[in-house]
Length: 235
Image (cartoon, rainbow, N blue to C red; front, side, top):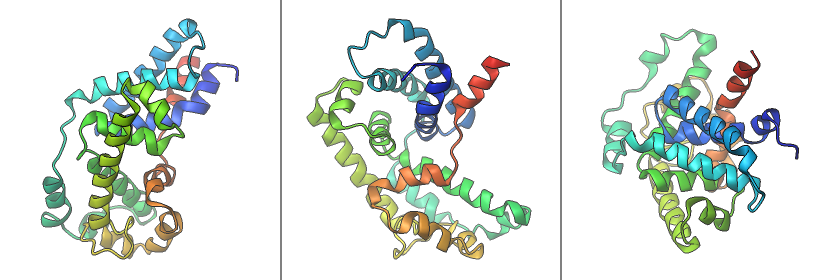
């Protein structure tokens, strides 16, 4: 593959954007993090000697840059998240009716997407990024070991703990993840009111749980920040 700004954007833009957006709750800060990865890759490209896979080299830059931006992110306990999802819930309908009818589906998807990011913050920063790399890319544990400069066994252990924690929370709190669960999420009624459950079931219902977030990224139409950067560079 010829390495150009266009091929970089097409091959890695979506993944780097998703990594930044799920690691960092503030949209603008996530955009800045993804943009800095872009600049660091372009600046360091002449020094790439091919001693590792190009993807490993690029993702190492992404890991370092995004973790630096995520340092100020506040992690949340499972108990706190449970309170947000259940104890402090409302049915979501009053807020939704303020939205034009044609925009309500988009609004619900945006709220669900924000919930996914919030849930991921029950993991500390490095564990969250290892989890995200594993579910959003085709990297194996050997690749992740190189990217995070950790023993493969340590990466596997971190991944296993993170996956179990996320699974347990979603299984008990998200009826899109567990269609038969006793979910009390405030978005459940808006989803049902828009008759979106059937749509969600088509996307998530038959998928293995490990691929839930991967499918969610496509379903929620996550922004590719790099496309914007490329356009700005050309303009």
